[in-house]
Image (tube, rainbow, N blue to C red; front, side):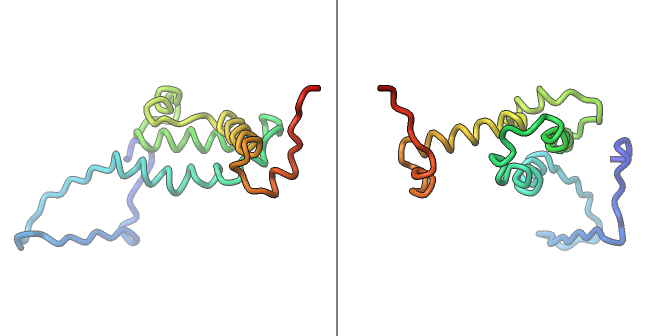
Length: 132
């Protein structure tokens, strides 16, 4: 953690242990790899993903800060340095870049609207093109 300039704040960090056998000394090692991925996906990735279809068609300079957040989240999960490439991390995590997520969400919404599986108010807003 120190190599990434992260430190625990001992005034705010709590650790509660309920041992199976009560002894005075314990040697703890905590593995957070899978837990970190779930926490990052639930608390970080879900925020920029919420209503991201509203960002469709905006310039890339608007989407870049969201991409930087996703890149940092992927590096956090794997404890990689700031300059590490994120493409292999995205592949391992099965994540798609932000611009592709926006396009996918927009296309999925249009598909569901066209097939009738979206809410009815969306179906009335999207006229289906049929060739004559």
